[in-house]
Image (cartoon, rainbow over all chains, first blue to last red; front, side, top):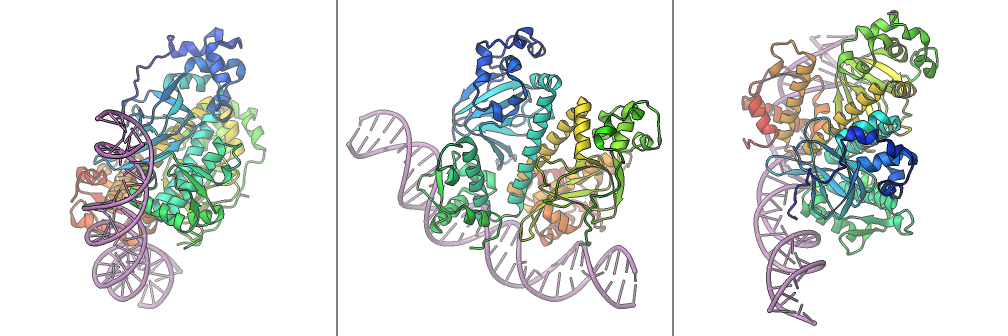
Length: 270
Length: 270
DNA sequence: CGTAGTATTGATGGTTATCAAAAGCGGTGG
DNA sequence: CCACCGCTTTTGATAACCATCAATACTACG
């Protein structure tokens, strides 16, 4: 595992206090200044929260956020530290996790391009976040989020939808963790990765049968509530059974999606 | 398990369409009509979403909702059916769950007094809900929720906070399901039940050491990702180890909260 | 008081964890 | 270029925890 420098909370921020950023008159004119362009050309804006803010107001967004590129294995959020920032993933994958005092770890989800990270009700983060690969993200303080929520009802509505979606995913993952076998867990995981690849590569003709797995076996194991050995053995077994193929560890080809679905939902004992 | 009649979606509702209910002038006067009183005297309003609506507007709430009392084992939401309603638990406990085709079930949470149930992004519910004991709840259509969201920014803000809280709980539960031992799971569950009892019985002098467990062993097992036998054995073991006491199955007395906490977080091997 | 559901306890087995070692992979530098 | 090193992954042997199967005890309720 890479040595993980803590994400500097003192990273360069817009000079003016957040409350003023939001009401900054210069950003309501629709003038496409250097900052605004960043949001206007953003590859994920139409798919994420930022779509709640119209093109004309995008300067507000650009001034409220700060874009960052982080190498693999970088700590974005350290579990238990003061909760002050919110992140939008532009590209790459971030893992979210919770730990026990003795080091056991549960990855609660992976945030891919278009998803957000860092909402918190309490004063501190109840979870950690770390980059899986090279990640481009937008950073925004909680104070600025509060301003956007107060100012743009659509933003509040979309954030609610996004969090509700996260909750639905979490419930599905609880079913997996509590009631599925190792084989069913791995099959479910691969199906999720296919869906994710399809979302982020809609024009790839192989998108239907490709799963992008940028994370290591350790991460997969911590996500599925298994050990790395069991994950490895199960993937090998799926390969033997001609359900998946490909010798590459981080790109898996699916030979039979229906079979994989049957396994994931316990419909096939084999 | 009780035969579970499906909750009738054709239950008596306010006569007027929801959109009109919200803008119904008569409810903005502050006049405490019969309906409004129900919300004004509600025992959980100050602790839940409804606190977002001021006393003067409470008639809006009263007309938008319908109160119901349901016996134990009643289906409130059937997994996979059209998502149309939202529920607020006034008293009692509701269990939320997801199932696999072969009947394996994972309870994703228990909604106690003050909590809500039934938010959904998709056209159908991705989960089921069933009463654990006798439950009093307020029912409200999704359309009416949308109206409240649009009309009362504080309602939207509070709902976001509530869903974020649910998500935090879900992440904690994923850690439990994926990485804790049976003993740690049961200890964590009992601590949660103590907290819940404390919230709903703040004036009981024994609240610090009492856990109310209205659900059966089957429900506990399906919540913790165990079998009923393991739950039963583990509770017996905690009793033998003088960490809990009481022969009653649905009311457990805690002898040592610090010990229980150590067990729950893996700090104590014994 | 009898019955059905619920909970406890015991015996045994299976799935997955743990321990261990070897093989593969990627980067660095001689 | 290839040898070397650290890291990741795979594969094997064994063990532990929890599930399964089975029987008994308990509780609630008509």
